[in-house]
Length: 201
Image 1: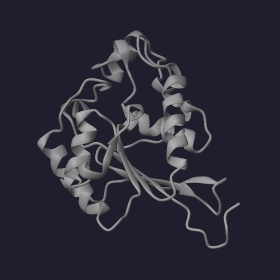
Image 2: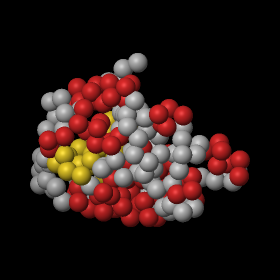
Image 3: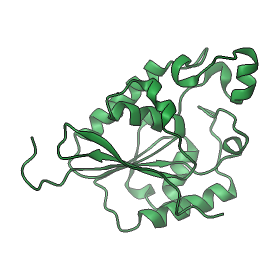
């Protein structure tokens, strides 16, 4: 139970900016692609969106698309690299589009089936659980830079749902979302989702 008028912490989720493969819809797991020029511009816009907010901790995936977004948003000096924040390992499906995968496996769903030679939803969920455990031990707001599918699983686990529920939480590049609580630390909620108002054309 929280003391009366306690300020409950929030966790801000920043998806990395655009890459060549996010444009084409190719699954980008551990392939370490750079941001496009448009992706770099929107990472700077994300920084403007975050201006005025104070974070006790900032964490980023080591992959350059997230780390560069973090840097361009103005948080490189404060950021700590967290290996658990890397994107889903797509194994044999790395670089492939969903339509191509479903030509061979018509019923395939990432969040239910995982990837051959890569991670299962349960393995990604275990990484998300480790991140959540660390974040919930921090007194104050936290900012995380990572990739879309991992952040969707993280959100599902934040709410106490199975990793498969991540399929319901679509995320655009350079978007900002916010996880938090309602009334007490025992009531996790989504406070903001897939905010792209700051993103330029």
